[in-house]
Amino acid sequence: MITDFANAGGDEKKMWAAVAVTSEAMAALNELDPDKHECLLRKLSETLYGKHYTEDIARADVAKLHYIDKSGVEKHGAHWSVDEVEAATADKAFPKGTTKWDKYVAYNAMYADLCTKFDDGQILAAAFLFWFADKDWTGEGKIWDYMSLK
Image (cartoon, rainbow, N blue to C red; front, side, top):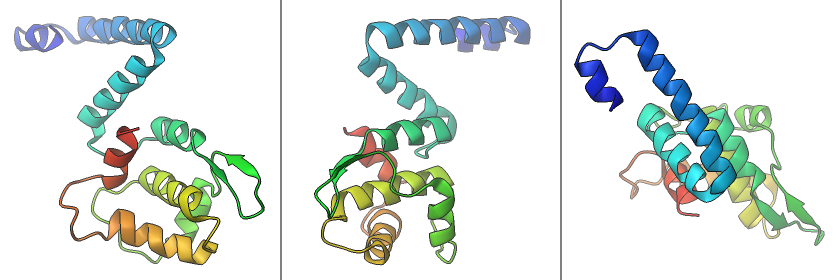
């Protein structure tokens, strides 16, 4: 509908009003069905940004991580901050388009999976190889695709 309106020469003010109505509908959908809201939000984000994380979706996905650490303690959320991931990976060459939020999700997800058996350095190396240097993965945004399956 918005595309048809734009193609027919619709004015920008009305288009922004339509975006506001859509935002209100999204908020209502979140109250009624959070899973459908998340699915729609991911599709919208992918349409706008490709298969790359933005801050909001990255923080939401990392907040959902749960794992048992080496001490047997249940943990939730991030092990590393986005700044810590950036500092730890500054010497790596990432695929074009990789965002710091892609890395934030990937490295924390890998930590959650491997922290009982490997140290931080090993996990950082494995995360890079698995998420960003996998020659068999021909698509864009491996971490995006994996996390969207959940």
